[in-house]
Structures are given as structure tokens and as C-alpha cells.
Length: 251
Length: 245
Ligand SMILES: Nc1ncnc2c1ncn2[C@@H]1O[C@H](COP(=O)(O)OP(=O)(O)O)[C@@H](O)[C@H]1O
Ligand SMILES: [Mg+2]
Image 1 (tube, rainbow over the protein chains, first blue to last red):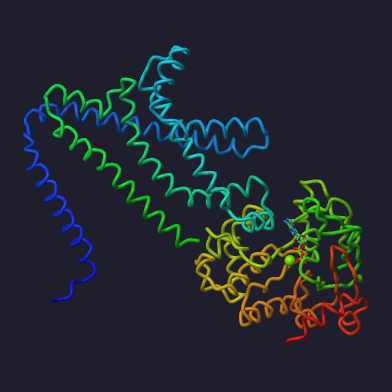
Image 2 (cartoon, each protein chain N blue to C red):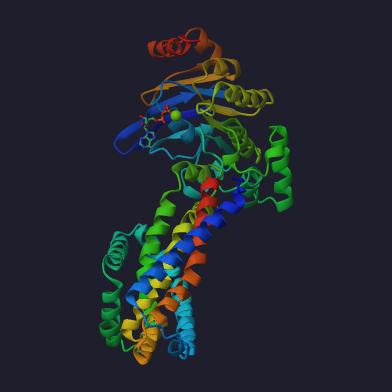
């Protein structure tokens, strides 16, 4: 048997696995006699793209906000003032420990109503950003606390003051360490954004639900739905893994 | 230089690492060696002498002038000194050259071009110029320590403080680093050195401060200390170190 060059081996394996997966799917569908109806689904393509764009847009907004929230909560958890520390620790634990679904329902129907904000999109983005921000706060905190005492001492020894130590040593090192985890968290954020449908945001999942009920289809909506998420999340995950490898080399 | 410590006390929690430590070197000391058993307080004393740690009480005097305790003035004093520790001195995310140039720019106010030129000059002198674009992780332990010495020397420090700079190195790399320190001493750099390398200390030091249990037990000229240590603790320490050499 001729030797296959190693650069070809991986794509070959991937092709082989994809082939096996397709065959398995085909076999499953053949057994349940699923009646495909792609024409009906195709009629809803514009709605689908609209939902997808909204999902992307609101995810982007929530990402930017969640990084700010995460940074603020991390600073709060490391603050000198004890009440602030307790407040931020409690907030992080509450946000991480309870389901996003409950946070959205309580946040939208009770809190937002109480302060008379009625835009589900705005409230949804803020709540999603808080939820993911709580996870980011822990990722950031871990990154900062992983910076060794010897690096801190070296910073002081070359004459850096507190601010210079943060700017030239702590932040650059912490950002490198936090990047892989942060990217992974952003992948979760995109998927979690689907829950915003419960407060009436017509993002991608909600659009597909409407499509399915209107055209009596289901898989014709859900399969493209999964694909639409994967198109965004797979490159992000791939990027996170690359960062992780680069970081492993740098330390 | 004349270096003095007067009743220096420094605690970590309830533990007194320095317990009213007092000593005074001769007026013309150039290389002061801090010797003594592990846990005796050498590292703590070295940091206090260099202004990196503030003692809870007591005073350090350099050529008759007391080191300030007030934060801004203490930072200014600290910036006149250069430090090298056991290991992990260099910033892990920066190249060797940037490790040296960054403090020159940000702390000592050099322009970008000047800082780079000064960094290259020192790396040349320490035989590291070919490695200037590497990060610390890509260098050997000996190269890292020489790089750390280069960084400490770059702003022309009044005092170079070295805390067991070779204790994490194998014998070959140790020789490499000690050669550099000896050359610096011969060129007249003022040095405070904490070390267990007794034969090296005997060769370069002109003053010895021997401490154990957070107290200075002996402070005298180096030849006198090595020929006839006055305390039993020092005799035992020297005896223990020369056992297998
Ligand atoms: N950061 C610290 N926290 C708590 N204890 C410390 C710390 N640094 C040093 N010590 C203790 O102080 C004593 C003196 O330490 P050190 O100055 O490092 O001595 P040496 O350098 O002579 O080995 C030791 O008993 C050590 O355990
Ligand atoms: Mg020590």
C-alpha cells in the first residue's frame, strides 16, 4: 500500500467521517419515512435570513456589553472595599447559578416593567450580557490571579508604579490567558441568545418556530437553523483552539 | 559606599523575618555579601536594603542618607537600584530587548531609539545580542539570568542587588552568570549579593553580613570573616557548605 503523506491524512479522515455521518443520517431517515417538504420551507427564506441577522446583531451587541460587565464584576470582586466585593461576588454567583430562562422572564416581565422599559430586544441584550458577563468575570479573574508573584515583584523591581504594573505586565499577560476562555464563552453566548424568544424577540429560533407552524414542517426549519449557528460558532471555536495553542507556546 | 541597617524589623503575618537587624559596613565597601542559612532573612534584608520592601521599623542608610518611607520618594529610591532574583525575572510576554527597553522608556524617560540602543549595547556586552528578539521561554536559565542582569544594569543603577542569582542553575550556567558578576565587581559596580556560593563570595566580596533567625550575627570585612568567623553559627554554616567541596 502506498504511504499517504501526512498533510493529506487529516482531510481524508474528515471526509471519511462526514461520509459515515451522512450514511447514518440517511439510514435513520429512511427508517422513519420522513416526508421532506423543502419547497414550503424555501418560501420563508427571507424571514430566516432576517432572524439570522438579528441573532448576529444582538449577539454582537451583547458580547461587547458582556465584556464590559465581566470586567466590572471582576474589578468589583478584587476591590478593597468589602461591601463591593460581597455585592459583586453575590451577583456573579446568582447569575451563574440560576437558569437564563428564569433571569429573562423575571428580568423582562418584572424588573423591566417596573422601570417602564418595554423593548424586549434591549432588555434581552442587557440580560444576556449580564449572564455571560458573570462567566467572563470568573475567566478574567482567573487570568489575573494566575499571574505569578515573581512577575509582580519583577514589575515593582524595575520601578513600575501600580498603574504601570497593570498596564505593561498584568493586562497584557492576563489578556493572553483569558482569550481562549473568552472566545469559548462567546460561542455559548451566540447559542444562548436563542432563549430571547421567550420574551418575544424574533431572533432566528423564533423565526424558525413561526416557519414550522406556518408550513407544517419541522426538520426543514431546524436543520438549516443548526447550520446557521454552526457557520458562526465553528470558526470561533477553531480560533479559540488556535489561541490556546499559541498561549501554551508563549509561557 | 557605606551601607547601614539600624534595628530593621520586617514581619510576614506574625512571623518576624527580620528582628531588629543592625549592621554597618566599612566606608569603602563595594561588594557586600549577605550570607547565612536558608530562612535566615537574606532575601528580606536584600529587598529592604534596595527599597523594594519597607520595614515596619528601623532605618537603612546609604552613604549616611536614610532611605525614605513615604511612597513616592521610596519609589524614586527604588528606581535608582537594579534587582536580580533567583528566577522568573524577565517579563514572559516580552522579547529580551523589550524587557530592557520598556522600563528605560516608561520609568527612566528615554526615547524609543535611545532605549533600543542602550538595550542592544547591554545585550552585546552580556553576549546575548543574537537572542534579543526571543522571549524568556526560548532562552536557557543562564541566558535568562544574564538577561535579567542586563535589564538591571541598563539604567546605570547605583546599587545592583542580586538574590541568589544562580541557585536555580546547573553548574555550567552558574559559572556563566558568576563570571558576569565578577566582571561587574571588578569594573567597580556597587553590589549587594545574597548567595550560598561561598567560594565565589570569598573571591569577590569585600564585606560580609552574616544573618540567621532574622538577626545579623556578624558584619565584618570579608577576609576576616572567612579566616576566623567569630560566632559558632557562622563556623557551622561555613563548615556545612564546604563539606562536599
Ligand atoms: N512572602 C512571605 N510570606 C511569609 N513568610 C515569608 C515570606 N517571605 C519569607 N518568609 C519567611 O521569612 C523567613 C526569612 O525568609 P528569607 O528572607 O527568604 O530568608 P533567606 O533568603 O535567608 O532564605 C523565612 O522563614 C521565610 O519562610
Ligand atoms: Mg532567599
